[in-house]
Length: 256
Image (cartoon, rainbow, N blue to C red; front, side, top):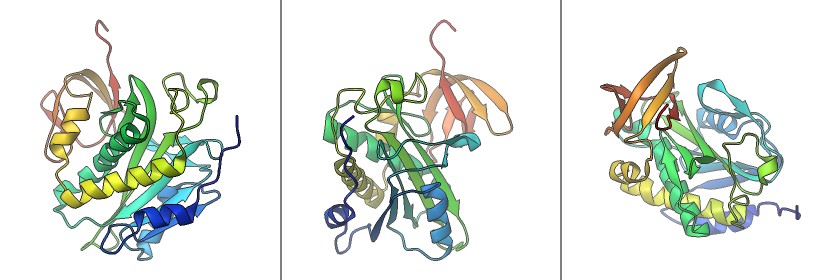
């Protein structure tokens, strides 16, 4: 593999930070256990909305249902951002899908690849997972809670370097994109959608879970099987008359 360039904090900052814009600070660190964990801690210390933390190497990433993961240095785009939405509490669940929509738009814009979303926020190319997204809340300031949303997007891994057969990367799909370019695009696309705060229709248009037979692994180690009929106005998945705010979804293949 060719040498992968380091992220240029100055170039990223100059591209996304502007007067009156969402982004306030972009930090790039050589290594972090979890950018989400570190940014939640900063949120509790009063970090402003629009703080972004990026790492070259995440060693203890967090997935849904408590899963952990790690990636080699520089092969993935791994970062978290902090926002403090001034919206009703029942709409806070849209922050993570907003990141998913931003990622879909950014990948399409920089590579031309037709990405889609699996509820709640896995970024897919076909049936392979390109990125995962996880949001965590900080309610230490109940008047303006902080929502930290992080993403790990596979960029430069070959198929042999990917952790599971169902994963993919931009390189494995034939796309050659700098992480820096991709990060700037994601932040720009997120800011546009966050400012408008009208995510529901766009999300439903790109969510391939809607209309599929699914098996949902719910918190508490229980399962729900059925057809996903939609996503409601609180970003909850509708399955068999239930509105689910959390769960790990498997798309069931026809005939199974």
